[in-house]
Image (tube, rainbow, N blue to C red):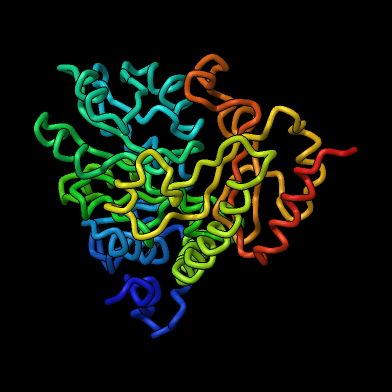
Length: 380
């Protein structure tokens, strides 16, 4: 089955009870049992819900995993995965991860004795030097948020297997349409379903897929125990969004290519970060493990451009958190998505106050270029 077909016909194709082509929203908290412990597969919606199960089956199939799990947010998904570890365990993280990931690790999970290191995972020698006796996992974002760095997934998997470490990949930016980490040997893949999978700025969700039955059982136990589940209506919205993921990702990328060319040649832009540029430092890995480049772009404004004035003049780019929607969004990572990272650490990573991150939507590319060009012009 080709990828676009799988997005529409994968998972649970029709409702087994009624034959409904659109999986119904089973808005029920509990389910009748014929006798104690005898039921039709569902007993309580925290443990399992037919609409959520349809979504979980779909994402597992799209990522070539054993089982999928739908959570109430991307951060809930990340937290659940990190609950696989215990006090004293050490986890290696990509350095410029999403600010929420950095925050939960350094402000919450550290209270329970889980140790962490944030390093440049695009450099395998740096990773080797960071592995300790207590190290249990390597957590990758690739491409990263917001600097779009890329890690060679297969090389990290090979390294992790030598040291018996788990590998976890946040695949939010690439989506299962452009990249499938489990097919490269990764143990767990996760997504903020809020972004490209939903695609319409109308749902907050997180998804996790496990490569093995053992990990699937552990994750189900954690999800059922902690209760951070996705509701049936949001599950239905996500299923609907995923059906158009292929056509959206292709159109997103076509727009991105056009806009990246414009930005890369603009005198008021110092640097452009995009995996599709052949000048990208990890371009060879992008070619090896990704089928497309996505539509997340970051760029540095020249010193003469005032960031606040630049943002005020925009018309089609909406200043907002999040990404991956049909409408184009713009943010300043240092003050928004990555504000929880200390200033000195942001400086080390290269997340400056003039770094702009854009999520390119499905508007006409000419309108988006005109919008950016107007805002980049310094008032006389």
